[in-house]
Amino acid sequence: MPSNSNEILGKRLLVVVAHPDDESFLVSGTTHENRRRGGVAWLICATAGEHGRAYLQRPVTPAQMKVIRTRELRAVAKHLGVARLFCLGLPDKGVEKRSGALRRRTTAIARDFHPDYILSFGPDGISGHTDHIATGLAARQAARKLHVPFLAFTLPPKLVANAHQWMRKRRKHGSYSDRIHYSKPTVKIVIVRSVKWKAMSLHRSQLRAGRPFDTIPRFAAVEFLKAEYFVSSKGNEDI
Image (cartoon, rainbow, N blue to C red; front, side, top):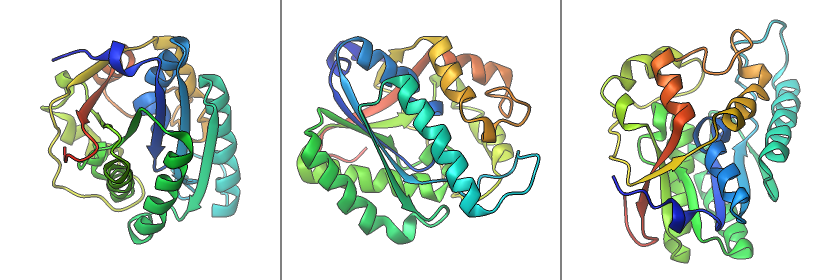
């Protein structure tokens, strides 16, 4: 696998995710490393994740959950040194129906930012979550329209064979596709473990036992904390 970190880091990165904590799970180490090398990142989050209430000890309303998760996301953005954060407030579990609005907003933000790369979900959505898939499609369409290279999140190579099994066990809320095919990574970014661990820890409302990665096998957590992986494509190509 080619490691194109020198080409990608120290650049202008536009990260587009569906829910608060997606950024921490998939691209927090890369965002930190990019900033350390003099780059700048903007972050778009399509929803506030108001239905992500599986691990709370007390009942809260969706409106309260929006406040909680947005606050957590802002803390992560500060931790990672994100230059600008855009919380779009689209309905959790409803991104697919608002994909046109997301595409237009993402395109407008990208025009202002002039990113070197746009990073988001690939067709698998990592977990198959339809919000993830719709978000990635909108980001790819924006990248294609503006002729910006696109980087799709993907899994560490060692996890691909059995990922479907434990990914399904993590499913709590939302609609999921069972047709998942993980693409082979073309980019590997070695990350600082402690940075990613803290980013995940700041999403306290999403931690089952107060610890990051408690809902996935230990061997998978080890791989996620070593490096982050992407599939690259040009702005006019599909993945």
